[in-house]
Length: 531
Image 1 (cartoon, rainbow, N blue to C red):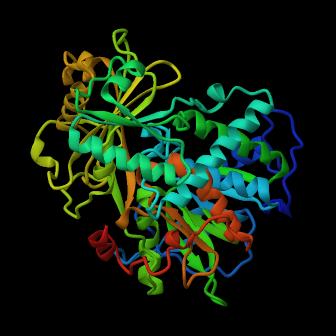
Image 2: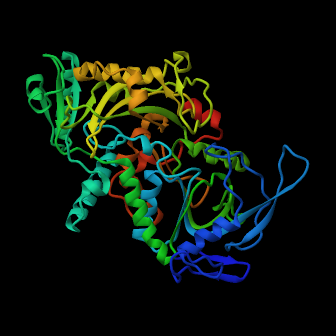
Image 3: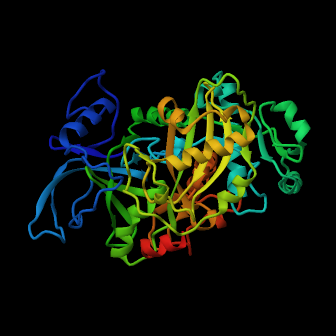
């Protein structure tokens, strides 16, 4: 179903592309005119870099939703006088909050599986959160087949592989389209104790049906000559693991989604932080998502897929509705170094230190105080600003489609700061040089001056299990968050799971471990204590 629109001069109607490029008309309903209409009719985007601005308290809606400019009285507890703000009103079947890989793939699945109209809204732009800093592993090697996340990861990997096969059948190059590389994965260790652990891990993977084998140090040397693990080390090798390019994957799904604009079924609203959620006074179901510039009515569902910012979006609603709505999710920052000009170092596979699997599940509730959401990362040189109870570094290494070395990874709880930490960069280089001697001469200063550093805020969920599915107590409200560093890998499985639930169909794997029921909190304080 197309979304409804209206203006001061026309009534609600479906959008159909009817104008040449650069056409700007209030009467026209093509995508170009809609964008121009939004740009000229709404207030400018907020100047603050905050991911979600402080919410305003608005009077309940009393008129049907169509698209138009409406003066709304804003009643602030902090002020004695009322102010007016002009918001655009629009109606869609589904509102998706979050334009990372999870939100975009969920929107794509809805568009392709249904006739619903979809709007994707985000406080910033695509790739502004965890997605843009992702290494892109579509792996099973670092996962435990007995873990609760295995089903979603396994299913999602199969869906990525099906997408790649479909692209190839259609004559498209998966490498160019999404940066797909079937490199295989190596989970490596440099001690006899960890090597024994890898052998047990390979046995568990084989029992789960994964093609995996243990490689001794000498066998590993033959396929990765630059890698050094000592005589006692080894690796778990999974030839079927792959990697993608996060930025290419995001643009791929955006392009697919934007193709539905001609049908009037898709819109993107960026730089629009969510400020308020509204429920129906009749049945308590979710009805409206209010952003800084728009009021978006949903006919079928509101899906919150905003990563580490998901709790912020739901906090006010949880307080006013007196319901447990807040997921136990908090930001877990990571650094990824993008290194160029290293002809002496060649990597043939995706690699990860075995210790990373322990770091992946280790979390502490200790947080240090940092500025919220630093939009332009600066360098923090004082190691005391990092909580050492939560700071971890383990080696990950791969090569992207352009031949650049991607080197990680750090994990730390430092609030919403995206500042570069000197100690984290130093730790990544030090750890990586233990496995790659060719990196020993690279200093932190070299990286800061000549290379690229990506930082992202992974949405860490208490227990390490994402929250995906309906929110109890509020009909049509759904969650998709808490994937931490696995959003790229788990995106397609998450999208399939949500849309299957939305349509009332049976899922192909056990979804119970991911359901938000019994895992939500009444306040951010309780949620952060859990996380």
